[in-house]
Length: 206
Image 1: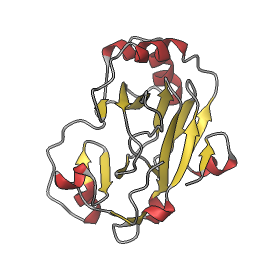
Image 2: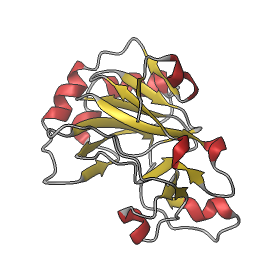
Image 3: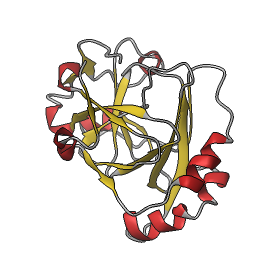
Image 4: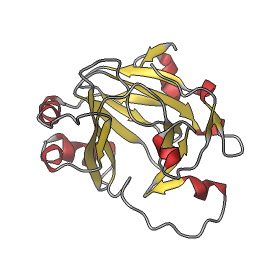
C-alpha cells in the first residue's frame, strides 16, 4: 500500500503536525523502557514520561489546560488488526519513525468500515503528531526488526477499564474501554476476546 508522510497534504483531513515543542527529553525517556519480548505493549500513563517537561506544555497548550495522561505504545507490529476512536484528538510522538493506519469515522456505514478506506502515513522520530477525533487509528506499525516506541497523549482516564452501561445503540457495542470505541477485524486477537467486529476486507499490513 502507498505510504504518505504526515507532512503530505493528504494527511490534513486526518490530523496535523504540531510545531514548537522540544521532544528530545521525551524521546530519551522512551528509549530507556525495555521492549516487550514480542507483540505490542501499551500503558496509558507512565511516570517517567510524565516527568518530562513536555508533559506540562502539552497539558497547557495542546490540550488547553485539560488533565492528560502520557503513556506509550511500543513493540512489534505491521498489521491493522483494529481501528479505534476517541471523543478527542490523540497526540503521538515517536522515539523511532512509525506508520499510522488511519480512516475517517464517516466511512463507518451501518457499524462497518471497509479496510479499503484506510490510508497509511509515516511520521519521523520526534515529530508531535495530532490525530483528530474523527480519525480512526490503532497501534503504530513499523517494518523494522527493532520495533517502535510511540508516546500516546490523551485526556486522563482514556483507555482505562470501564464498567459498561446498558447499550442504547449500535455505537455502544463498540465501546471497549473508557473513551475508546473499537472496531476489530475478524482475524484480530481482539475479536477473539469479544471485541465488536466492525472491519471488513483485508487485514492490511505494511
